Image (cartoon, rainbow, N blue to C red; front, top):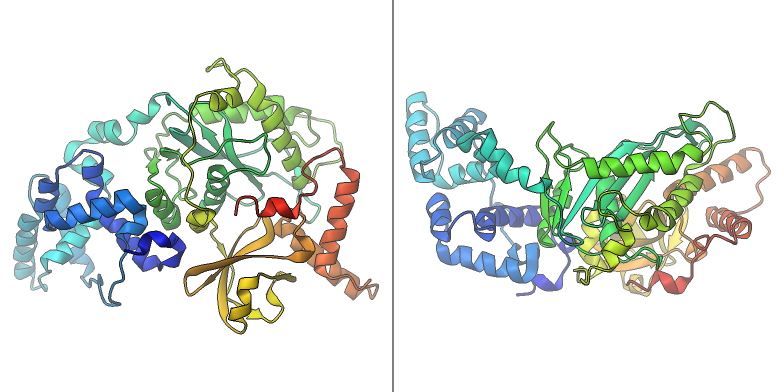
Length: 482
């Protein structure tokens, strides 16, 4: 079997989603809720097939459940009223097998003059219903809360057992890329046991699944800063139930890495006090002393988002992580480091590529590399693909490098030589392009390219902030984690 040799991004969305459906079938067995005999009776899938799926998933993760399928496989065509009737029967009759449900819906279809569905179609409709909805319909709200939410009120007993994620608008006004005042959003991932910050993201955009995925990508992988050692695959990733946390890609990565992805009940967020306390700490110990804080009446020059980000990182790593926490009575970084465990890491950075949701339009490989946002990206592996069309993925917080895919398979990580020494935000690229355009309009163009404008800006930052270690980074560090 060769599936384990490729990252999830090597397969189509349809293949990955089919694998997710297989996982949902065997999931009750994996968490000791049902026996294989029960699953076989409910689904009609042989026990031997289920055993193969369980074996492959335990050995290879979600990739083990992926196989090439015919283009017409899995396509089901049912009238909406038939689907609705099947769902109602499944939710109403808890103890009835799918064979019984199939017989009942066929009787209804015969009376109404509808085309009778096959057993497989009834099975597919059943699988499309969430386990939580079935639990709620069959056993009531109390049973649903106990199984899907109440368990996560407890304290984690070791690092990376439970991570929590949330968003909040910060109580501060800063300058956006156009120089206008705006209130930023903060997305945070917190380790439940140590209360240490595993990842964060500052942006002016409203919360989205993209932001959550980017922060999870940052949280899991090793950080370049040696003072920020929080990393690894969490056992449980606990979030709110909003659409800003839910996406197919996030679910697929969670299943492949064996992360238990848990959402709180809609409107009843359990255990959110821990992360809300962190937001309160940021507000009281960090934001209150900065210009633009909403509680201050004095008007002073506002920070840019980039300046706020540097100050926030410094606060997290050198203040918050070293303060005695009121509940744990320990420093967060000490709790995480001194627990005597080794974090469970992904096999490679490519395993997390699905979390880089920013996918550009297809780009053509030119003889001098890939052109994107006024920059040029190169890698020796691109030489054999000149003239071919590829897809790129990137982290908008640092587009000094892009990840290149050809026919759904990872090809290479290409870098932009002119800015490879720096961490460059996508918005900085846009700002540099706008500056070049303005110069052209005024006919005072100095002849600088977008890359030269970025490099000049970064060099000025470096000269003005020589006491700040993250102003410039070495090319060698760029490949440290590759």
